Amino acid sequence: MKKGIYYLLVLILLFNIKATSCPVSISGIVLDAATKEPLLYANIEVQGKSRGTVSNSEGRFLLDTADLLSDDTIVFSYIGYETIKIRLENLMKSGEVLMVQASGLLKEIQVVAQKLTIEEILKKVKENFNKNHQASIDKKHLFFHSYERTPFHHNNQIVLKKSNFVGMDKTTFNELFKKMPSEVVEYEDIIVNLYGNGTTYKLIPEKAISLEDGTQKTLLKEFEDRLDIFFSDIEKSRENEEIYYKIRTGILSKKIKNNSSNESTWTTNKNDTLNYIVNTDLVKSEILYLLKEYTLVESKNWEFINSIKKYNYTLLEITILDDEPVYKIQFVPHNQGLFEGTMYISTSSFAVLKLDFAFAKGKKSENFKLLGVGHSIDFKEAHIIFQKGKTSYYPKFISVNQNEFASIDRSFSITKKEKRFFIDKELNEMKLDLKISFNSESKWELLVMDVEDIDESGFNLIIQPATMKFKKEYAYNPETWKNRTILVPSSELKKYQNK
Image (cartoon, rainbow, N blue to C red; front, side):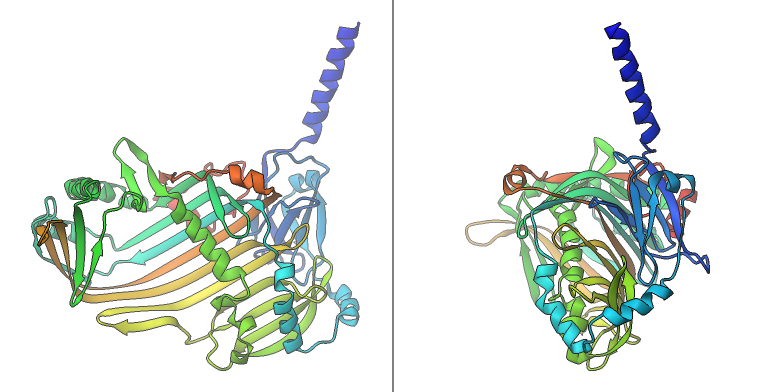
């Protein structure tokens, strides 16, 4: 009898779990209720948890629901719109989320908000920044996406004038140069855990893919095969402390020391044709660069807050986000400023909640041309969203688009040398004439999907691996990130299914 009751209780428990647990992930779209236009970068979070996502540039989202129950609440918020709270079981029935502009509530908010000048508001932003955006010991679960497209114009010239390196003769070089693709397109997507204590960071990878144009697969294999001897010789010489390389251009030269710790950023393993081996510090540095350059008040990309004399400002309105009043401030360059855009500032805490900005018309940065080398950043656009955590705000989403120009019109020589007591011996030499230019288009997106507090002892136990694997993919596959919270790929990315 007791055993029968026991089995009955187990069945009831299993039934209850089945009835209240949810599919591993759900997808949907966030729209304006009146116009049915998609709302890009809408904030989406699980109520009561530091967990969520944002809609993509087309309003679409994907949310991991593992460990969530059907009666959990999903909160949708967007600047100027009423916050919507939807039970997960209802969201599963229809992934279409219709948001209503908060016109009625805005009138009430206008009354309670502080009447300050823009200069006073921005001063309070800087004064309260460290309090509002505190560094903490935590683990951030991240999705990081990078895209780069670099056209290669066939009027570019690289002439190999001389080479006695094994595997890099004029015939091989010229044949490969003629086969250079008209453009190189790369996507990298990763999910990682970033552990930080405010000064030191450690990266633990979960999954990473490198998505490349399928038409380049055969060409890439040919390049690897034809240059195998050349690169193998370089790798072997790295193990010999007596061997070094010297790069010379005109009167300038640089000695490249062999150091086994400075491994190649992207390497291949002949026994593992499915993956790239990547230095983990390289990936971590890309993520930390975005966080440093786009979420800190002293950053040069925040000059519209830290160098206010360069800008003219307009307080457009006091709007709403998460049922809280928000200053909506527009800025345009006045005196050497670079950017135009809009910032959204909390009227109570003066925390930065959202930034949308881009280079103003005709503006460039890092623009120089010297000794045959040219460079400029011709376009930059950024969207940053901050999320309120337990004690302060943390960067939840960063999106950056950038167009960059680079040119080289110089002669180079690469010499392999062996150390000797009196005069080092020259082993091999390569001389090239370069006359090339590139206009590259880049995009980076970072989404903080979850934040978990840890203590110092827990942080110290984390050991970052020296390298991580990127799986090679030659076509977009929607199953790759099945049952994961990620930024939904744009229509542009999905085109790669057909290549």
